[in-house]
Length: 318
Image (cartoon, rainbow, N blue to C red; front, side, top):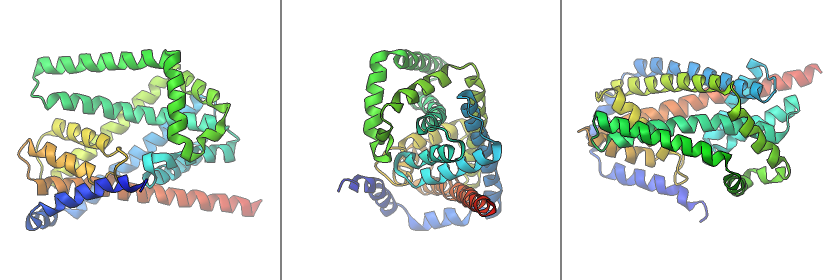
């Protein structure tokens, strides 16, 4: 029963499917262009490359030299494991690779992953927040208010992170959340973990990480907009970006598997505000799932397998 809550999303999906027009849904799928779909998904490759390179930059800030190819394969392995584990906990596999191959303490490896994920989450939060403000029918003045609020939230986050009481709270929360992954076994290394996170974020070189994050998400949003095009959803790229970001945040909630159910419910609701039928919204949601989970997961899995075989080859030669 402890894990039963993960079926909430699947239950939501079942309810949505029970209320749609199946013939309309089949028609929407029949209108898809498989060739364009595969072509659009080639964008996934540079996105993964940029994110893997971003991780190597974070490692360099920590003083860890990890060659590009091994780091790429480690990133793909962690990404693959992250897709199939709750809260993407499987991404900790990258830290295990670092420890095994470079002798890097597990706490430092986990710190690099934590910083890596912070940038992803901040982009989603920022774009989704602006998107939520736009849903209230705000005009130009509303956009200014949104930017102001985001600035206040960002400054508050910095102030909180520098607060000693907040760091104590964060440590307790970190142990509580990640104890299942064995992080609690770090013990005294938690201090090293948090000091590494803080020094990485305070480094002047962290701006390069921010730029790489913007580049990766620009391609990600481009891919999402192109997918909307082949689903015959013409709302303009701004709405697509906002809606995808909001649904992306909801898909992270621990009440579902692979974001199923929560993502669909969110997109059906948001698109309905712009007059898009729920069958078209479901078709688009399926394209997002197929692109960002299945196809991207297969690419990551291939990298994971290649890394395993490469390690076996090295062991044989030795």
